[in-house]
Image (cartoon, rainbow, N blue to C red; front, side, top):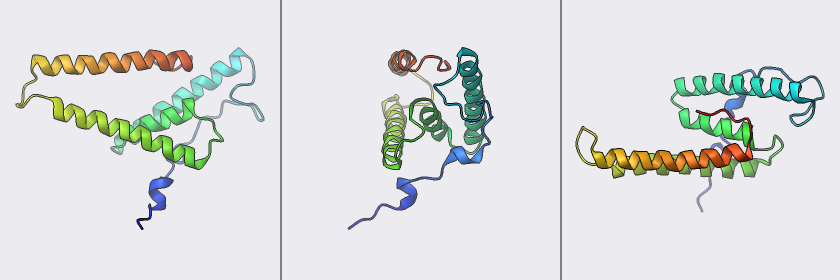
Length: 144
């Protein structure tokens, strides 16, 4: 029987590699506090995500940076390890599918074709649509 290595189920935590800015007063929660406290925390989270994203991108882990951003913005802090592992697997599988599909769908040659540009435009429209859906569920999310 094939055993899944523990490093695949629970990969190293990139969140542990960058110090998170402290914006919450002791005992405060992400959902607690007034508008000013929530705005301050959102700015700290954004700064942290930007720092972590740059660090991971410099290490060749841009997709991992996207997973970390999703984890911070949309997943409960106390989510069980199995949920995190399964969600990371789904996120990475989606990224792999998109990248593999782009490489497969492009016309042969070194120059882009009208068909290539149309396909890429359709991908952007699909992702923009999902971005709008995500923004509706997670107000205040930074737009790229």
